Image: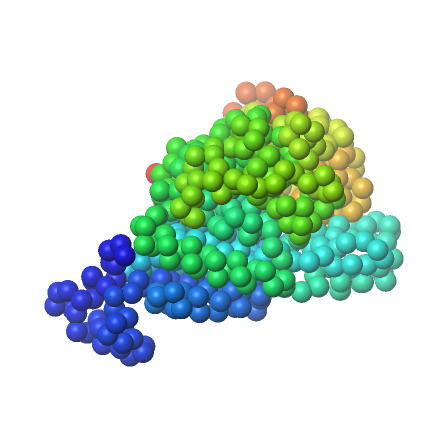
Length: 558
């Protein structure tokens, strides 16, 4: 076996006896000190359906690691439910929790000098937080996804969390009965698992499989179905072999591996949040990756999967059609994937996919590269005087990819939602939601409530919405987020006034405020940075330290 750093640390030097005594107190025997200590970072929580089904996976991982000769040690990581916090002050803690989770994993692995770590997550920030923590600790690590949710059902239609947010808009517009609204609310979430479309959780799990740090075929499993437990056991065995081989995350997370992950994000129609999170992951891995690399990848990768929010199917349908391995095989065969990247299995991407059958013809979830849904990817980086550092938009599937209209300016999400619900937003308007960035929010909250309400009222493609905050992975429509620099940092979005003309052009990748430079200079001279919304605690610390969204909103940037 490879050098066991924990065993070496507690069996040599003057600290040997007290260190060993602590472990004897946990039931160790003499022979246990030669075994690798492998941490199990457990995101189980009863606060959200996304994480309420994780304990059985943690138990399976612990039992398997012990059975094959490791000393597994479990520790907890927190979670914030984006779906539950949406539209409330609690949503500001969501992105913050990514950093807290990463810190927890780095701290426990480093502080206890572990030989490896298996991380288990379900809700949106569990995934990037776990990946960032594993990369920082840089001991052999593997990610286990808690699994997607099965769809709810009402009147012959599949339901998911986004169905509820869109139903709010339909009900308020008089397009849905109170009975139907209440039934959708009750039935949309039938049990444990993460939100069912290709939203942020399923986007990140799929990307991690492509990155090489999850078991092939595991990223679209349902939490309530039995195979997920066996995949977890296989992940434990795979990690044990990686510990023996000393195969670390930074050996795997290279620029070419990130290209593979982003290729799968584009091919599956994944969440805008993936841009923010992979900028942060690349930063942790010290990989040269910028926001412009997403645009480079978008131009070469077609959209192959017909998945919600803009398509018809859920992640479980993708799994039954062949899952991420089938998508990766299509990309690899077309020369759009780096097959020589090493993965946590010890094999390359090409070796993992070898022998996979051709794309099945009895399914309509995954298209062949020769007949894509869209010839280019859907996550575009828009620039202009409103976003010189870049902004992120989903641009595929829009009937009207260009809009120029009067600005309707809001300083917070709640007042914007109130205006939509009251019918004060009209077709052709461009809503501007600002002071919601990493520093200004703080925490860069998601805007699913306003966008869901717009869609429910039939305004999803006729009203533009731009923000320095984020969007849920369930969002679609003429929306642009991550505008950088943000308003709180003095970005041009802070200078927009009610009625100004703004253009969102998905064809020219342009986000432009039609105000001349002289007028902008006058406005800038009069602008004052608002007082911070929080002066103590975790939100205050995040606001002080967070980098621009164009750099992943990391806390340890230059």
